[in-house]
Image (cartoon, rainbow, N blue to C red; front, side):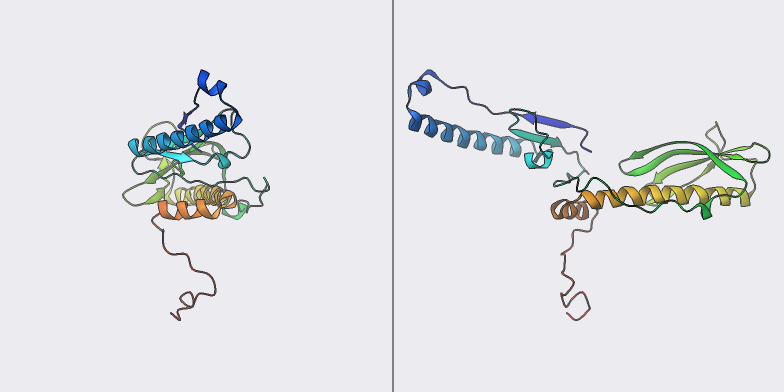
Length: 224
């Protein structure tokens, strides 16, 4: 989702001379005005390198009246993914498998968000026997490039001290399995609404901007 959009409009006001011209003259003036507007927009795009232009066709018939150009602010380290579509508006996904549920523990709360696509927050489990609460943190660890699930005190920023290693392992696996489904479903939805243009942009942003080969290309089978 684009969080920062900037709208630019270039609309030339008609002059008295324009109104006095005949139809051919007005058409010529409009054409010249549109060409000048395109040149101004091109100069504006190059003058502000962190603005990426979004095709109005990507708005799926939701373009506001008189909108002539739409831009997204793209910061360093970010990439614009264009060409997204809604498709049919429904998608079948794989549900979480209860076989990974931690025996004797119940997930009773969660405070989660997606931070730049990475799950972040906490999941709260209660022991069915004695009521102990175990909080499983969910965070992306950049140095290791992986999700981490520390077992934490319910209300303090410290590791838990009243659960055995076996209990922590079981509840952590439970949390990992649920978050794994969350990530997979979001990725599946992203693939579903992506066009070839946006797929290429996603791959490029992921450092996978390689040449795309067809299935019958000899290099796919290792023949080239």
